[in-house]
Length: 62
Image 1: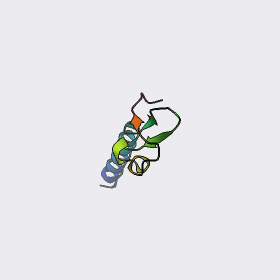
Image 2 (image 1 turned 135 degrees about the vertical axis):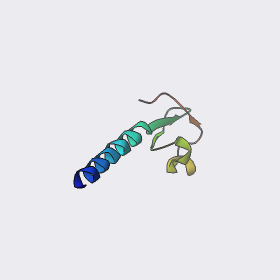
Image 3 (image 1 turned 90 degrees about the vertical axis):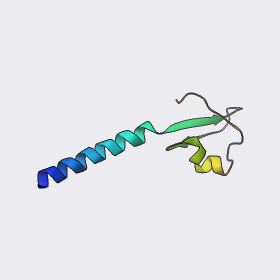
């Protein structure tokens, strides 16, 4: 039973890391003089919410 619990925790941990690493990115503003990183989606980033970089233009991730 302990092996099953350990295996379940290990799979959950690996899945969580894979999910988080796949949902991150970086967005630049239009003049490309400011950028911010986001964890899940650019619209829920704190920098986006407070308007830290002004108008945002999505560019490919670096």
